[in-house]
Length: 220
Image 1 (cartoon, helix red, strand yellow):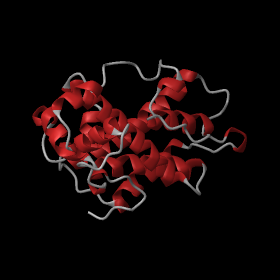
Image 2 (image 1 turned 90 degrees about the vertical axis):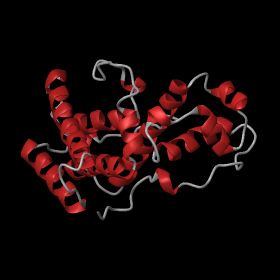
Image 3 (image 1 turned 60 degrees about the horizontal axis):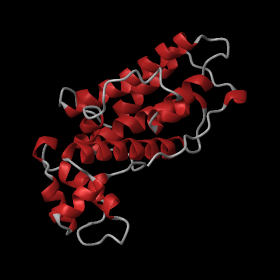
Image 4 (image 1 turned 90 degrees about the horizontal axis):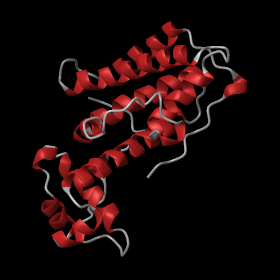
């Protein structure tokens, strides 16, 4: 499939083995874990394997991650941050409904380029209602979603109605990503943009200049 280049491709990152600098070991371990995860399931990923890939002892890994679950949570967190970066890049130069659609398209494209990390992102987090959490505690993709919905809906709209719009939009892009990853449908750029664009148009969302969404702050 041909996908646009405004993306974060984990697999194309630089080799980290024995290449980290003092103080950057945690980052190098997360990067190595993300790359190795594209070659095997999270169940088969081991801390010792990650340590070998980076070129350090297993003891050094345990100083940063007491167990594999801690590393997987860190990888998932990095995945959300990278997805947020990709969405922010996709909406550059656009606004309103077009920006909302571009953000959704970037969500799907991230998933297609980084399938193992994408699946981990939604399987390692503890159950919680993301719409009851303070905005500052959310990942950048969720904050961006809520910012767009706020900017594209009347100020008089209730929080519950705005929540429903957000869930519909999220369900659409997440569903597209999962259907494509499960090989139920063949996905390309044209289909991604067509499906998401038609949804935004059908929803009748109108951009308000006085409520322009600010780019979400990065979360490491």
